Image 1 (cartoon, rainbow, N blue to C red):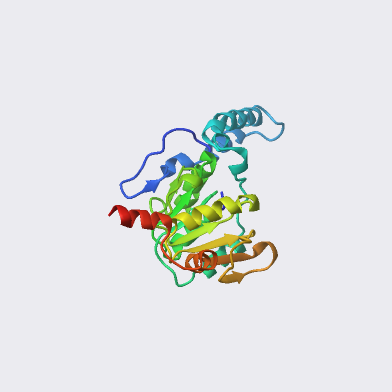
Image 2: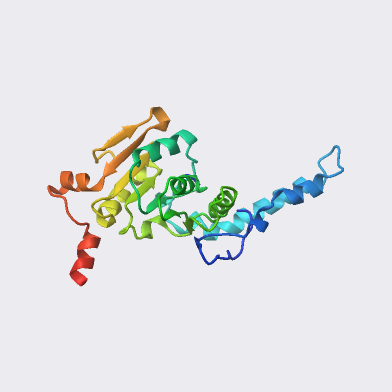
Length: 243
């Protein structure tokens, strides 16, 4: 997890998915430059207007952001460091396929995953401000329309086709997330967790020190340790039974 300024509908491009915006909407420096041009001292009106606008937008965003979730399921935004992102990618080296970042924040993990060949690279983030910031970062990185950011509750996301999952969440959410991952992920999936490990799971890889440490978990091995046998997830079994 890692993870804006303009409210309103977000246009899609033909080859895009998730939250995308027109790069022309991202020029946030022009109003500030115009307002400050020619002024040499004093606060003036611009900071007052900007502060009032920011406060208004924060109030407007609350109904669309974390407030819709129970407090115990809300996830604060703490951006991953460059070293954490590097460590997470190192534990996924040699893997491919779909990668999902749960609580994608400002999109930095999704963008790095795309640069390393994961297709599709998808982020789930409920906070609209962070989704807009993710779109800005994607445009600046040359990945506009190539990565996906969904404004969706990560607890409701369907993970049944995800082979690679990255997570950077609060430790209090671990038990709930463990159950979701075991119930939905395919047997060959790998979960990489930053900073706070899953204490009831045995990692297959660990790298980094201190706050930069990350852990990798092989879902097949976790199921075998907990259930005594590796096999399909309940979601996979239900699909095969229905077919």
